[in-house]
Image (cartoon, rainbow, N blue to C red; front, side, top):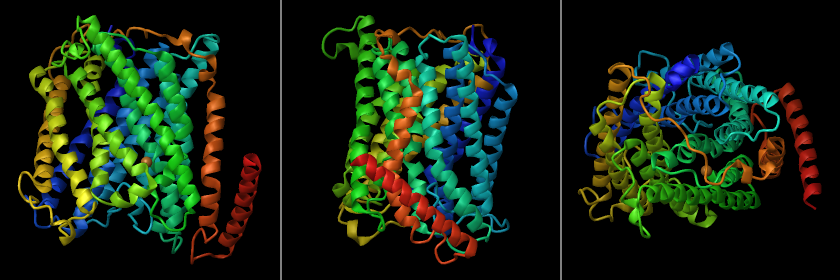
Length: 582
Ligand code: CU
């Protein structure tokens, strides 16, 4: 029975989440195309796309893609995964309706603030990029929308966790099903990391944008943002991981290689995602070098779950290829279902994630980071990770999930079959050229990056040069994205309903949960360790930054009392941490 018939309410919520996700994917894609052509000088859409409103475009691309496209997809996928793996409905439909509404309204308000930047007649503006920290300031609506959006995700987390707890009281001895385990660990990680952005937005950015305080401490808002800003990447990646672990083995004709390894990976993400954020601030003054080194060390440990994933997922796909009759060291690759876009999209996304992992290791090294920091290298890197590992996996997942959610068969299958390959080729051109341009010294985040310092790329403006490849790649990506949306719209609104649009059975792992140590399911223990690591990594740096003045320059009497209280509290935590360490 299709999911839509078994759980109509949940299917409707997932459909709303996916519709919002794909809407923002389309809007964000427009921003991406404008940038790719404008920066490279190939086509200036409207002469007005310069300076100020270039940043409106850049903000829309970032916010729509990495906050709304990804997170709406996540809440949809998680709702599907949790209810399916626990085989029960969500506890309380009113809670469910609340969070999807809050997220939608929030995303609408924030988008209005961003898009308002184009129209001089509207007093809205939010050219602050997705990395929203002082001294850039947006219209209050931008922050208020984001607050509704993020609090919506908190309620969604509550919805999933409370549903799990009911299941647990009915099934006291059973192991947590793997997909539910992924949902729970990720939701818990999200609570820990969104403390940073909530503090930044509620205590500083909203009062500041409303004019209630005159100044804020920029280093503090940056640090709070990056406290959130690394772990959020796992919020983008984990729906992809979930699909790679749960669905990709089945699509390749095999079974997941190891349930215990998968559990270890998600525990490591919960424990290590947050105490690494300072690796985005290697070049920031005001943060002691030692804490940058701690962040680097934790980051290198965080490579482990991704390497484990590469091993487990490839082993599962190989098992599938051999089940289909593949032989030899690499012969099994040929027997895989490359014509099925759900499979090929996820497999190509995983391949590109490997390349993204390598450039990520370079970003993570304190000394090499100085070379690439704030250059075009960095967007080159994250277009491999969030821009492909996540985005292409989500699109591939949609080819498999949307039929189950609508009860309809996928249409325009030939277009769907080539779409992932166009994305892969387009991204190979664009991302490779971005990395190279970064090494030439081309800055990121600028409308007119034509400094003389890198004009020694002799082929700059030609198709073989970095600009030509960025523009070509950007166009191919836009074509691919349009093809995806076309297939989705036609499937969703056209076609007849059928009883079982796809084979949605998920086979058990080769090495199942019975081989997983029980301690892996002890979520309280892992949350405790995660919080401890966060305190060790952040208490002293945040304390020393806050000591310069929480609202620097504008401390009124009650604020300075607060500052003193915070200094005492932070000092106490630091002393406690020192005691634990020695
Ligand atoms: Cu990071």
